[in-house]
Image (cartoon, rainbow, N blue to C red):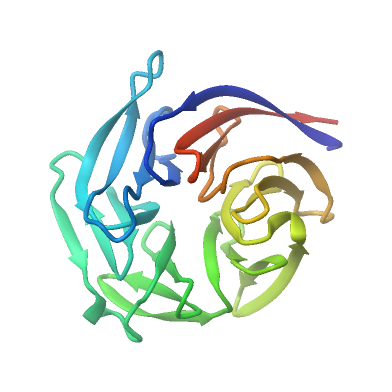
Length: 264
């Protein structure tokens, strides 16, 4: 693979601090969710489904959240990181279960991103420098890392990729009990979101502070493509079925969708 070409397809505007986009692979294509923080520290956050793609609009599935960020999907439930708690949402009914701060040790301060496996939920706490593991409603510290933010799971080999919200930004790979730094660059200052294209062995990484998104070839460490001049790109998502990349730009109040073309 030689390089990647990005083509802008769609922009959804008028949002208030959109933080995370999540594509649910277990559901039909087009099942795309956005977490919208709203005003910081105010209980006006929400998680919405993007519906009616010809004239995109947001359909709330959970409201009255504080500052919702990372979204995951496990055991047919949507999981959302919300400051110092994790909210589990049943999409059809809207019913919520909450894992409050007393369920965590240490108590969380800034829960950020979520990733899921078939039966496991991982959530990062950027201020407490830990990644928690939630399994069968039991929560424990999974690993310790400076300023962990974005997390991505690779189902093909069981590894985790973790972004560190630092300057320069860093990305680590965790597998079989070993944590390894695989990439560090000022291009991803404030490393935030991770999105994996497993079939191409490509990891998309957003730099919240750098205003860039890069495409990293995991097999050789080379950069295949880059988007820049973005407004605080946060927790990105990639839909491998349609080769589309979703980028929430928090300070601009928009979510952009790009077609990704892999060139030799």
